[in-house]
Image 1 (cartoon, rainbow, N blue to C red):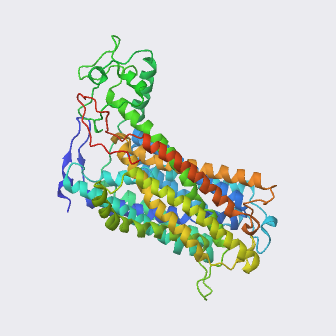
Image 2: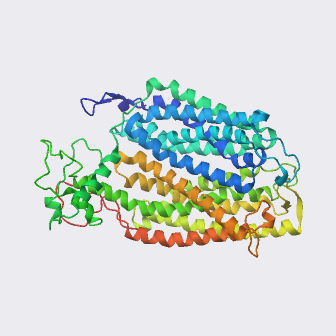
Length: 588
């Protein structure tokens, strides 16, 4: 099936031949990724409920801990991408990270299986009277979470790129294989989410936490086994040094030459050496951040090698490197605007669970109750249903209308997702107000550690969860594509980790926001907005606050999008030895 992928490609004399096996290695790669997603998602999706029920943590404490854990996990991807690209390569990084993730899940399973590793069962007592975990029980818990952070930090930025490495990008069949692999990747991700949010969450909530955490740990063990069984088939691309070094060199060279004056025709006189084996797209000069252009000014002290490169790159950079740094700087405001957007997503992963716990979760007239954490599946369903409709029906019509590839630009798609997130928070507030009113006037039961259960069906949470799924389909997917297309080719692993770093900061921001709201509303006339018992608080006010922040952030995003200049779009000046890419006009 993949004949062309068997062709050996030699890049340099020092680089070993790469024997691309293509689809022959995919059973091991896809198998590894499927079991890994089943393991990690199955463990983390219900972790909030585990901390409040087994470790007897208060909701505020557990939510803050989850936010810190998620934030640290996502932030670790930047370090993992750097170490992979600079020192270890993706194969070694994935192997080490997979083992670390398995050990972390094993430790977490032990906290549930061994009674001495968690606090005693609280029974029907009020949560305030429940004994909390001891310091050494918390230490054991943190060891498991820490190992999972290490695992995620290496797996998340490398797994997609490692799978794509198995195909020859210089052949037509290899290019099709890469595209097909991405489709399979998201297919397995969705499959893992569905299983985790239904079967595994049900086992955790209604059978046993030991079994419920042990199953994902076993899945992660199978993931490790599949990964190492295919070792002889893999293409193992060696690291090519740190791409961040050239970025720092541009800033250092620009600072050293900050007193120099730019020439009147910079495109003719500035240094612009481009190595023959450079994989990055050749960029035209842009007028933004002109101070950085000084890094490419040639002075009598600057010496050039026989191949045209600078002897001291800390004093002289090429315009190609300068433009690549400008690309990174232009991305930062767009990335920053996405951080506040993520806060709305976090609410549907945390407080929506607490809403479900104090809602009527019964299905019809049966005694079966949908586990609170399983409601997140409606968000995933919204995303998976919307993507094919948008891609197959809406995009072709938009393309005929706008004459643009994709119908609308990447930044326009991100903007639509942000608008949907604002409406999600408004709808969430309206539903929460109704849920609270019915809980106070017509309760149908009592949640052991929280309070009255509202007679409002938990199915009323579907609109907000589905809408946030639609929002993700626009903003998150567009954001990943944005980083992939806008980052220099040799920094795409780091670009892939940038979304996770945004998630990390948003989790920290959300934790800070919850702490501030909890502190300032505790003595207010409305009472604490976020108490243990949602019926005594005003979660709806908190949702409206997040919606207001989202509206302000949307205004900031519009300004950034209007200012943004896409990679490859120059200023119309003559260019020498620079290839212009097809510019993509600003969406605003």
